[in-house]
Image (tube, rainbow, N blue to C red; front, side, top):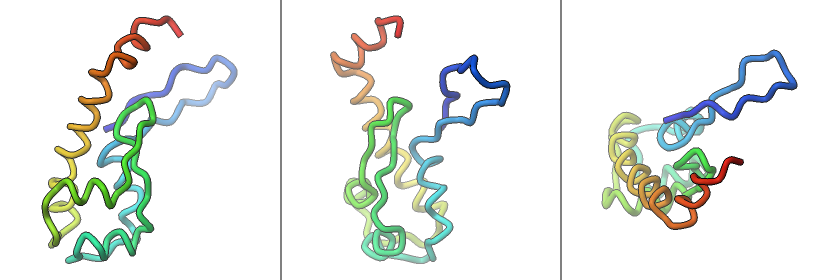
Length: 108
């Protein structure tokens, strides 16, 4: 997933999208080889922190992989399919917290 960052009137350039979830993880997957175990993936990728929402909340790849309850991934697509519900659960929990709800009410 991704969302456009807030508008910045100081530049005429088109803003980049903020990537989170599997879109953010995809940027790291060039260094991965498949099939791979969860441990091999964290070794290959360096256990990056992956943002799971537009607010920048993050989860370590190793933790997300543990939450899939899978040890081996045959393809990149299989990995992304397994991780998508993990990122969604974390995003939903973060957006339903009291702090997130209050932050959403504020104009800044």
